Image (tube, rainbow, N blue to C red; front, side):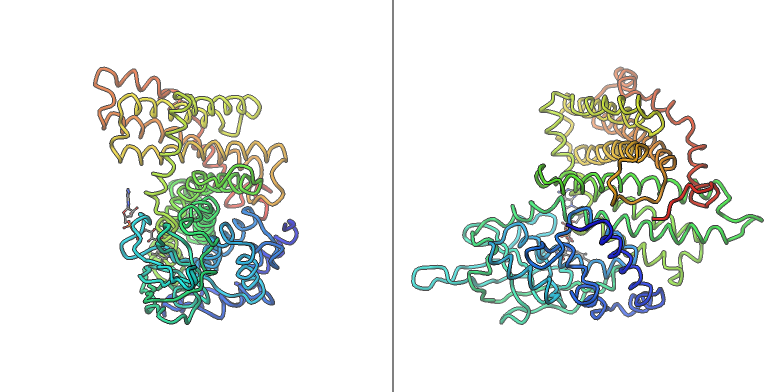
Length: 558
Ligand SMILES: Cc1cc2nc3c(=O)[nH]c(=O)nc-3n(C[C@H](O)[C@H](O)[C@H](O)COP(=O)(O)OP(=O)(O)OC[C@H]3O[C@@H](n4cnc5c(N)ncnc54)[C@H](O)[C@@H]3O)c2cc1C
């Protein structure tokens, strides 16, 4: 259990360390040289130095036993510094996850204590040349080696692709097929028959080491089979997706904000047509404000999911992890791209860093499950809810936001309700027309679900902040009035997106005919959603004022 004070101290140490050891110039040079700064990674993971890894190791194994909320905040902070270095640290989180969820008590004690006490680095070896999104296609094998009639060990053969820390880790968790099914094994560096390739020459996160692994008759003792029972591998991987995807979501959030936090001050100094760019509405309301709203909606979803994971009674929250990852990483990419535009020609050069951030953040929609796989995960799960509740799930959710709106008229809960009602109608039309037989429709529903649910999260958090009831660790960049304004901006966008895109896909897939379209538009509440856009420009003005310090005391230091 980590107190708020300890957490804030850790975040501050991380920032101070980065300021000293990883200034922009160093980051640019390492990026240029395509070099993983191993000394920095070790420093961050060593118990007698920064010791970031101690945060997530359980207390009985020598760590601090941090929860999902702590890990989210640390991941966001690391991503603000450099996503490549953050990925190196994350690889140990990921690599040790199969151990945390599936290992025997002895295995846990052994490996997690080594992470805490020795600062050893892990890598997570799931992906293969022919098994990426579809991990079930994995070909790496682990064949039992028998002695005196019992399994004494396993021989591992196969290849792994794109493994973070692949060339620098001390230990690897490796997914391989056993006679009982896919299973995780721990393989140590230097094991006979185990090799790794040269690091990949990547588009971004060039400070992280990514390498292919090869296993040729690599022998491991039977106690290296995580959990001691074959065939648990995919379940163990599934069990932590809610948590691990939340970490990558925090990466998207941190990188997106890192880019905006360069674009915002830049635009106060850059004078064009006689005024700073920051004072030009067509600039701030396109390149800055909508991205802030999307990132904060994603943050709201991350924070709610982290709180639920830490409460510990709702299972693995895979779908929520997928929504958080999808929204935050897509928003992070859009924010970084807009930040290049915001800096014009300067943004397009290496020197101003937003170009590097944009290349770096690109990975977040690919690793730990691509955005398309997230859409599928989200849609499949919520589709079942739609069916089980006979189409009422999102209508019921919408009613809760109507109630919230009655208590807090300014947190965007009315627009969130419109988004959720529209979503329920789109899904019902999809059911009647059997439209999910088109895979594209299923995935597009995933996107609309993610937008509508995130609008709800942000409205709820804005209301909690107004009531002064937010978790004390919650990130506080904006005060209650500003967060409510961001929520109104995002909820309007979500409602419009759900209704208009939903209409497009239902009509596009033949779910309604010509004569039925007007009626469907009415059930979607399109008119109300269009009306709800009233006040949007004023709200954007207010957020621009907050971001540029034109509203006294609106902004509270993070
Ligand atoms: C820098 C980097 C670091 C990484 N680190 C690790 C690591 O540490 N450990 C590890 O195990 N893996 C790691 N990965 C692998 C990463 O998780 C995979 O790249 C990712 O899961 C996608 O797999 P793939 O590359 O084989 O793409 P594919 O699965 O071939 O997908 C290609 C495209 O097709 C889409 N697609 C695939 N299936 C479907 C579908 N059913 N419906 C719709 N669209 C679909 C995908 O969304 C994607 O856009 C890393 C990758 C990179 C690039």
